Every structure is written in C-alpha cells, then in structure tokens.
Image (cartoon, rainbow, N blue to C red; front, top):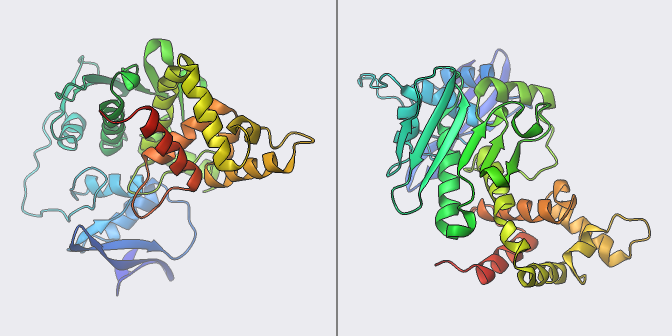
Length: 345
C-alpha cells in the first residue's frame, strides 16, 4: 500500500481516503474505507505503514489499526486520537513493555505484574481512589493489545465508581479461550457471579485472535449490540458482563424489578417489558409484536433472549453512549430509570 494525494492505494485500487477531522479543537485526519475488506492484522499493518509520512494526529477507532500504530510509535491517550511518532525519541519500553503501556494509559491507576510467569500475564490494578482493585489474567502472548487491556480495566473501574457496592462484586477479569464455556468463539464473554470473575474471549484482546475472528465471520455483524467509537468492543462486553453481576441487586429488590419491567413496557406500548419479549410467540397480539420489533431495532437481536440479556444489552448501550451517537428511545428510558432507582452518590 502507498499514500498518494490523500488516498491510500493497494496496487491499482483506491483502498481508503484520508479526510480532515477536528478532534478536541485541533486538526487530525480520519480514515474512510473506499472498498469492502476484512480488516485483519496484516492489512492494519500495511495501512499504518502507508501512513508513515502523516504529520497530523490520526483519528481512528479500529483496535487492530490502533495497535499496529502504537507498535510503530504513534502515541496518545486511551481511545483518543494518536499523534505521529517522535522520530528523535529513544525507546523507553523497559523490561515489561505491556505492563508499562497499560500503566501509561491509566493515569492514577497503579498497575503491577503479579508473579514471574512468562506464559501467563497477571496484573493487579489499584485505582487508589476508594474504588479498590481489579485483577486481570491473560495468556502471556506477544499479540496482546495493551490499549484493549487498559480499556477493559478503565470501564470496570468507571462502572464501579458510579455504582459503588452494587458493582463491587466483579473482582477479576480473565481473558482466555475456553474460559467460561465459549471455546467455540460463539460468545464474547460470560460471568461467574459466585467467583467475582468475568471471562472474555481472546478475540477481544489479542491481535492474531481478533484477525482470525474477523476472517471467520467475514465482517458479518453479530447478534449482540455493537458500541459506537471511540469505545472499543471490549468496553461493551465488560459493561454487559458486569451488569450480569449487578442485576443480582434487582433479584433481591423485587419492587424495583417490577417497576423497571412495567416502565420499559410502557415505553414499548405494552403492559410489561416481558410481554414485548414474547412478541415472537405464535398468536402474540400486535402490540407485543411491535414491542419485540423495537427491541431488535433499538437494542439487538440478542436482547430478545430473555430479561437478563435484554437489560445487559440495554446497560451496555447506555453506558457506551456518545454525543455523536445518541441512544435510542428505549435505551434512553432504561438509563433514566437506572438514574432514578440508583442515583449517583
């Protein structure tokens, strides 16, 4: 690939255009694909190499492109625009570059490696502001993307900071194939409430595994909701799985559960939210069917599985909302209800 006149060419094909963007009041460039393609690690590396001469910040949200850019020396805060490499700077990676990179992306959080093992990475992150600490475990592989690890910890800490003891049950994040029963790559995460652990699939955090998953799905969207940029995919899965731990609070406060169920149902024009979830049943009345369609359109197909998955998908989309990607009416209503039942302290 090569950059010519603001366009990245792959042989004789115009592959992507570089467009001017304004980020935080200063000029940047954004990448707009011109042809459909499965963006794997090799392609991400070629894109970064083609942009080596750019002297402005790069506004890019894709995990693989960001990871390859950081490997090439681009730098910047978590989930934000990246600045070009400093050609005069000397490397300061140290003996444990992954831990150092995660630490640099989480200002105010003490990140340390636990144990000497090279085959397994064990991190302890302490937010130091009364939020407590989190433990993270992952295979010790070179293709682990530090920014994605930092994002997972950042989201978990932020949710705990907002909801306090309600969200304090999650103590560990484990990233591993087969953990939690999803070794067939069909599930991005799972939760074990009793152990305080959420499990994440390696395709969320490892560049080679993410490449394999993208090629496996050929770019087809999944049935779970995707979060908007600048959030990363792992942010959404962490929020979804932490909610599964948090929703135990609803189980022990049946009055809140009933009110939430009825209020979400009212938003959909039915008596309860669970009536809308039954909208695909044979003989379901039209209002239930209409509510069901809105859940699919405004949240995700996966949200129609059951009440627990529906609220987890709603929470994910509400937590990962952005000013440029407004939430749907149903997600907005869910967020307003959470603020009502569990107001910020």
